[in-house]
Image (cartoon, rainbow, N blue to C red):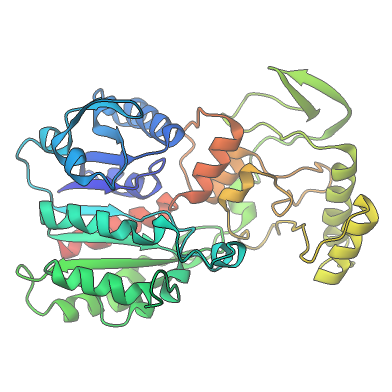
Length: 399
């Protein structure tokens, strides 16, 4: 079954489909360069795709006609033969993807002075649906954050109403109540508190009783793939430990504050100041000793003020708990790891790129080859592959 991945990122969603031998990735589309470089490298090295340079297209999905037919000598995107040439007359069985979620997220709307009403990312689903209408797959997968259920961009209409109208006008059917399309990923083997909306669209002319099929998919088929909750300990406890050295070293052109080795790709400690190391150790040791003095917002804010001399309306710190799923792994990790502190107090650090990838369930053979900041960002924006593999297996039964 052939698929195209739109808004592919570094390939978290497509990874689950690639792991199933009954799916074949015809093409992926992504506009951010680091994500494209990493996805190409992974597909080439681990799936033997010698044509990954062509198959993963770096382009702006809003330029749909050029994306389909190809373009020449673009100052930003060079040249490419286009999707039609890649597909070469093969049937497109499904299209998968999710537009950037920041414009739909509640946190994003709070941070934006205009509530993100003017953010172009609110309407990228229109470009996605143009490709759906053109290729007419048997079904499509539209992934996003739960905040999409309450987002009201543009003229104030619920974005889900706009999406539903666009989908119905395109000849597809989605479940009547989108709240039934919300998944708690901790129930699917992801050791992280993460919820996502997965909208499945069925081509109306191919399926009898599409609503009945959709209800069965969400209520019966997907729950069959649930498993026991996995924890931070399950995900990262076997990785090499790093401890503070008490001095600053230079390694490969960057400052290093901890011991290190290169046994595991992408498992390299971030540089932390002595002050931050002390804060991390204090917070983790507080939990290890069972005192729990710093497990409420007010105490964490007071600690931040005492240690930095600054004030904050929100608490800056969070220590992962060994025997629970982690908090959500966000793109914000590229800025700092203050809310993802390692639970071992002796290490006094935030999580590494590999630990973030493990908590997102990327396989260890996925080596991230960009800067640490870019790596954290693309991992945080990805769909956890362990969940997407279950989704792919469940959708196989519909297809």
